[in-house]
Length: 451
Image (cartoon, rainbow, N blue to C red; front, side, top):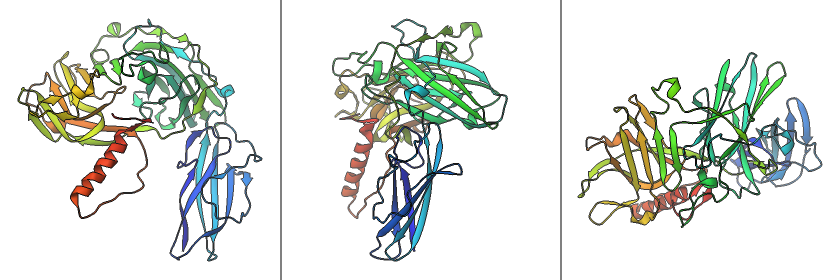
C-alpha cells in the first residue's frame, strides 16, 4: 500500500506568513512494496474553492522542491492556499497528501505601519514597551499580527503571551534584511483589548564582540507592527504602529545577551497608578520598510525544561544548583519573598578543581540575572538574554533552597530532530548525547562557536 507523508511547503509544515512568490512543495513516499518509485504527481493549489494552479499529471519521480510555476497566477498577500498532491507509483498504486500555506504581506507597499521608537532618552537602559488599546464589536473570522523590531521583542495580548517564539526577529545584517514574523492572535481577542510589545537591545543595540561594546547597528531600539482583524462580515480593520501607540518601561529594567537581565516586579505589581512608569508619546523612526521580509529560518523556542537536580555548598560557601547537563537557556524560578528582596543568579559551565563556582572562561561576560520581588508570588524568567550553563550560584536566599524550584529553560533554534542513535556501549551513547547537545547549544537563530 502506498501512502504519502511529511508534506511540506518551503520545507515547513503548513507555514504561516511566507513571502515566497513561487513556493516549493515536497513530500515523502512510504510503501509496503519493495522497489517502489514515484512515476507521476499531480498538484492542485486552491484559494477557498477556486483553483489557482493545476499542474495536471506530470510524469516524474521528483518529490522534493516542486516549485509553484512562475507563469502561475500571482499569489496574493495575507491569503491562505490549500494544496493537494496525488502520486502514482510503478506498481499502479496512488496516494495523496494535503497541506496549506498562508502568505504574509509580500511587499513593502502592504505595510501601513510605521517604525516607532520610545519617547525616552538615548541612554535608556530599561527595555522599551509599546502599547495600544482597541475595541472589537463584531465577530472575528481571523486576526494576524505582523511584527519586527530593531532589537529583539516579545508581545502580549490582554496580558497573555502572543507567541512561544523568542529572540525575534533574529540576527541579520539589519541594513539589508530584517525578518518579520506573522502570528495568529484570533483566540486571544476580546471585546476590549490591549496589545503590548517589549523590545530589548538584542544583537542590534546590545553589547557584542571582544571589546564589550554596543550600538553596532544602531543607538535606539524600535518596533514595527501591524494588527489586521478580518471580520466574519467580510470587512477588515488595521491597527498599525504610529503615533497612536504609547511608550513606557516595565519590569525588565536591563537586558544584555552577554551580561544578563534585571527584572524588578516592584515596577508593575502592587503599585499605585501614580507611581507606575510614565507613558510617553512614541516617535516615528526613520528606517526602511523595503528590507522587511518574512521569517526564513526556524524560530527560537524553549524546547525543554529541566528541574534542578542537586544542591551544592561549595568549599567557599557558595550556594550552587546543579542541573546535571550543560545547556543554553535561562532559569525560571517562582518566589514569594518580602517586597524588595533581591535575588542574584550567576551562571557557570563548570566547577573548578576544588569544587568552587568557576566563571573565568566567561571572560568579560557577567552572565548574571537579578530578580527583585514584589511581595506577591512572582515568576521570573528572563526574555532578552541567555546563558551557557550547568550550574547556577544563587545569592541572597540562604541555603534552604529546593533545587526542584529552579527550572532551566533550554532555549535554541527549534530544529526538527530527524534521527537518533543508541547502542550497547554507554560511552558511545554519551558521546552521541554530547554531540546532540553541542548542536542544540550552538544554534540560537544563527550558528555560534560557543554559548
